[in-house]
Length: 310
Ligand SMILES: [Zn+2]
Image (tube, rainbow, N blue to C red; front, side, top):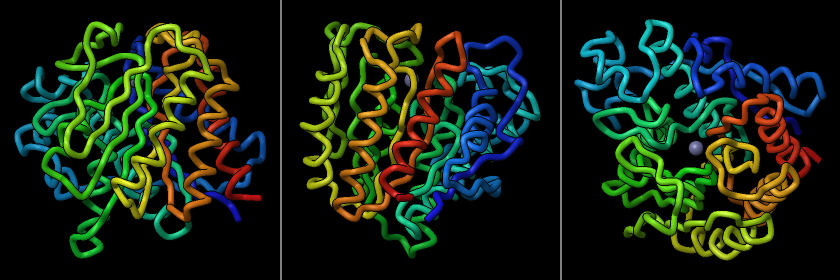
């Protein structure tokens, strides 16, 4: 079989000189196509106002659409433009499309982020609208109001926006394994100083600075299947972050490309063995040499292909 991926040139918006290498979405697509991985790549529909309003406050959705008030429209720390407003609707649309495809086919990916810092009434940390929760709510509505889902967040940063949004959504759970805590638009780089508490449906595992691949994988192996047992998900949404990588300017972890690829392989193997559909998104990655960010993301696709397209 081939794996359904979603990407569109409309994911791109010119952010000027910015920490977030938004062009990586297109670079990942090019690398996957160049290698001839067994995938099909389609452009998703943009999300609608109705999709966004299931998750986000009307004043915030309007601010991002119009650019006013500017501080709210730029609360995710991107310079507002009409192109940005368009781009975030398409990247969120990719989350919806990938979730739907995963449920139908067992696996799918969106070549954009999951936007896990975004809150109901504002953006945060380069995340405008929370594509993970927008996608779950849209698919849940399409299914007549039923869905059980598990977000596995393996971005470097704690998935605070998702955790906050899931507080009122007991049908979805999250497992976030992270090396930087994140709150109030500030990354707390030392998880021994501050970390997230567990909530009724969100488990938080802080990985200490300096952790190597064996420690990181042990944290994942020790928690993922237990999270599945708790959530009993019909689908796993996997935030396959590139920012835990050792050269990332935010990362205190000592993780190589092989370590992150082993992480991805484990996630896909567990989902396949249990027969749980999985969709993945790229999430963060800020290593100045963008080819290294692309390598992490392409490795995730290679790992999915090795498990699902053999
Ligand atoms: Zn991150």
